[in-house]
Figure 1 (spheres, rainbow, N blue to C red):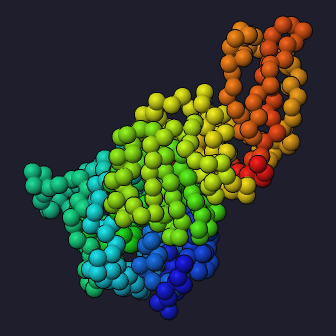
Figure 2 (cartoon, one colour):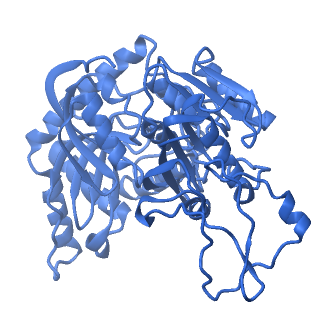
Figure 3 (cartoon, helix red, strand yellow):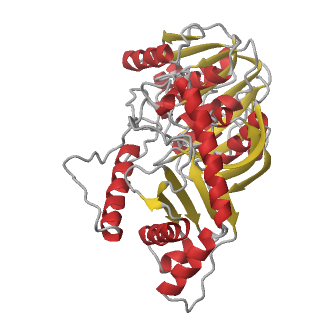
Length: 501
């Protein structure tokens, strides 16, 4: 990786990140941006960097990027404060030093100019492509970004009608949805830019104001003190306000689209930030061979290939539709020379044993894309194949549903569970055990368990009931388990290292 390009001036930023992603974002800004004064708030990471904005806007673990105007103590209101008094305290807190606002607007304008120059040279296509593309995870995200933006615009229009009755709108001509073709604000900041306020308000302040009322109070103060003009449809500058009982943040968004919207993905699958986090855990080194045995549309492989150049990537899937989408994504990302796709079953991988250095896989959740695989029933065999093709010292990184995560812990030992790989039957607990299968069924059961050991015959107890064997000695050493948000649901990331064959 090349050294970060420095602009000489230290700029204070903050990024939003999904739950569980903050640790990845903190590591990334320190490594790529030589960031200083890094700190974490709920869902946000704050940092300072002198690296050029073009490099900052390429962060992979961040959702949105902001220029930080001010971080301050929370807004404190008296228990006897009425609406008028609360509005006065809020405006005083937000406005602060007028010169600080002017300086921040100038810095924002300079950064916008640098981003515009980058787009003019053919880079940063994310600002021109995929404006309405919805970034979804394998767990689903519910309403979607497009509908959220439309609701936001409708709320803004209603608010503007109340605060600026003289302004006329023509609903027949307005486009209330996402507008990817709109140009970015001009690089030179006008003396009195048009603006709008986007506010997230939680905690005690909501007893006095709704989020829309907070935005209106702040917007009125900016118009009166700074002379800026409100424009809720196409402002030159957006003011982002985050208020809670724990923090107070002011900032300006630096890109129109979230950083998590990838221009090189035609069909989205797993949330791109989480896919990047999976790849970052795999400890991929130059010259490595990396396998995704259930690659889907190729999101994990493409995110990894964007980060690591001298690496060979292989994606396997048994669904023709998924492989077609993956091929389209690989072609759009211009990575066909480094990512090979193959149709095969994850339970019978056409690869030699100990032939790959890392296995990274988002096991299908079956929410965005349907799956014919019974994951719970086939997980032992899938794990066995992953372990077989992985070399000693190689890394296994898996993303699973909470239900499959519980099953995985029974198949592979966890650090906090202590040594459990014994060839001894577990003692009876008094609970009902499943009945003994017929002898023919028992003889046909040859599904291997990770470690290459077939399950021993079931043991008969005094009660005549059967209980399964404890896990055999396995070669996968547990490293860590992380919970990350996928939108509507959470997923569990498990990381293992193969210790022997």
